[in-house]
Image 1 (cartoon, rainbow, N blue to C red):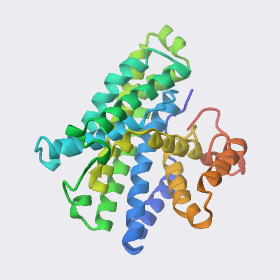
Image 2: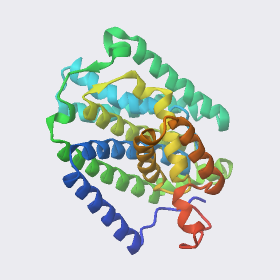
Image 3: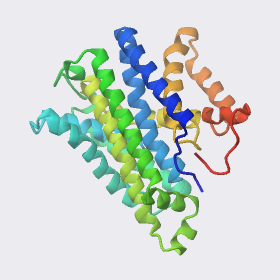
Image 4: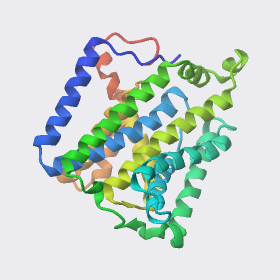
Length: 317
């Protein structure tokens, strides 16, 4: 069964050093680096929400960007159409995404494997189409822009610190959920739903719960992204964002709680630097993915095991 999240002293030390390093880079690296860090941290939360669904729930979603987009539009529409104060809209965005996750999840968990994946894609396409074509409400393909200063008018460094704090809190909550009795149920159903049902669990209810939790954190990321950009566009719910999240999780590693974070960091750096080196960014990404899948099928987080720096675990961490 997929293991709980365990933090050894060495991992705590590494985590603290990483946070100090990120904040130092944010404060002393200039505005450009702060903006890049903000986007990377938001994507890390988005990828981690998908990682929860895939690694612990064993559900592959091809439409996870729907909840990212619903979070962004939930926040934006609350401010622009309903006149809701920004502070309250920050809560409404993730709640709208969660509601979407519950509605779509109730349909999707009725199926398994490829049928589940295709149904998630269909739900995401419905969301994208509504956002894209409902001009009178969502602004259509031009989105909604200019309704508030990007990043609340905060300096780039201060906004990045805020996003970093949200990411840390979000990951702590996710880890707490995974280590709780609910997390044990999620892992049991993900590993073998029939055996879990025989033990008295309700697989669909458990799967719907993890689906809603995953949608909530995707909605938090989407809300932050709308604040970061000062705008919301239909592409946030499009297939491109879902594929980006899937690539991040694969790069980081499906067996690890940290796979989404590591994948987001590497993917963001590749997307920033590769176009400066080659005009064939897509080809370069494809080759890198090919190499990772063949050489490190469990992602970059398994590199320590492959190098013999850590004993392989029987379960997943």
